[in-house]
Length: 328
Image (cartoon, rainbow, N blue to C red; front, side):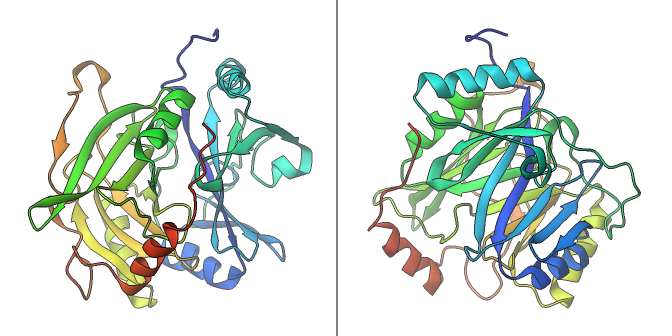
C-alpha cells in the first residue's frame, strides 16, 4: 500500500473500552443480560469475550461512566501505515503502546490518538486470541470481517464528523435517515460503512440549532446476535433483571436489522441486533434516504418516540455551552 491506497474493507470495529466504578453491575449486565463471556475480573476492571478474540468489551475502573476508547483493527501493517501516514500529515499526535498495557486491550500493540468528542481511537493489527470454550447465554455473535458491531454518535458538527471518518478510514455513506416531527425534519442520521457491515459508525445531528442530547461520548454500541432466539431471550432477560429498555424490539428500514436497545450501567445504550444485511458493493444504491428510524416497533416504553426526556433536555442545553472536539 502507498499513501494513496484505500483502507476500505481493511478495517473493522475491534473492541470497546468503558470507564466505570460499577463493576459488579457491569458484570451482571454483560453476562446475565446480554450473554457475554467473562474473560477477566480484577479490582482494575473487567473484560468480556464474544468470540475467539481475548477481549471485545473492556471495563476499566474509572469514575467517568463513559466510553473511553474504541479499538479499530486493520488487516495488516501496510493498512496501518496508511492510516498513520494520514494522521501524521494532519499533525495529529499518536502514541504507541506495547507490552502489558496493550495486552489489557487484548492486542499485541496499538497506536492511539484523541478522536471526536475526546474518544480515544486505538489502531491495531494483531488481536490476542483465546481458543478456550465460551461460557455464554447467547449461542454466538456475528463478528468476522464486519467487526464486533457499530457505534452511533451524536454530533453538533455533522459535516466535519462525516469527513473525519471518510478521510481516516475511507468510509462510504450507505444511506441516511431523516426523522421528522410535526411535518419537519429535526434529525439527520448518516450511516457510514468501512467494510461489508452496513455501517460501523452512525452520525446523528439535529437540524436548526445543533444540540447533543447525550451525556456520553456515544449514544449506543451495537452487537449482533447469531440467532433470533438469542435476541429474543436477551431482551427477556433484560426485562426480568430490571434493566431499562430504551427501545423495544423493532426492525430498521436500511440495514433490515431486528433489534432492541437497553441502557447500560454507565448510561449509554447497547443495541443487540440480528439479521443485519451485508453490503454488496457492486450493486449498492447511492443517495437513498429513509423517512423513519424503524419499519416497525422500536417503541420507547412510557412515552412517544418524538418526545425528549428531562435528562436529554438538560444534556442538550449543556451541550450549547461547550465546543465539540474534532481532530481536524
